Image (tube, rainbow, N blue to C red):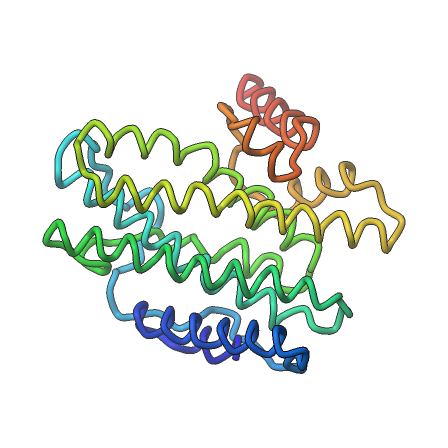
Length: 270
């Protein structure tokens, strides 16, 4: 099921399949006959539609969100992030089945994938209401890099994707909400508020299962997290941080502030 989602290119078709498989998983769980977690080989990169054109981060045009065109560009970037998140959550289900995990692990990531599918469609609906669509603008080619870098490191994947990248979403979404509130764009505002509320849970799933694996292997979670982020995360960890929402998701300040201070020190030394 996970690999079928990953190998479907069109965004709307991918998310429809994601919803369908999530519903089947939870129906089986509710009936007391959970679907068997088998083994499959996910692709290193998920299938993608021909558009958007994927560019190096430095080549993606920057637009100011004060204009309608700038807000469309911002939403297009959010849609791209959400589509990648759908694939990331199905990928973690398929890629690491050699590590035996409780059924609750699969419950959490199927639920997260289902919610990300909803988020992608909500943002696509907003784009279409603004006479645009996903694929109308170029997008960031590096979004899948963290998945490729951690394709053979389960704990690395949990550390970098939910606990760094998705946690960053908690930091920046309130600012986006303000932009669309000021613009009076109520449909987008409602969509972003749904996304903001549900993303806390996705970061929390990452933290929960990261700590579970640390406990299983008798490792210090904070030390391991710092080591894995230094190894796999190639960008700067920069404040401001949404400390309240990060704490709600199980990410205490001593996990991320030391890494941010290291980034700041390196910048000043240069």
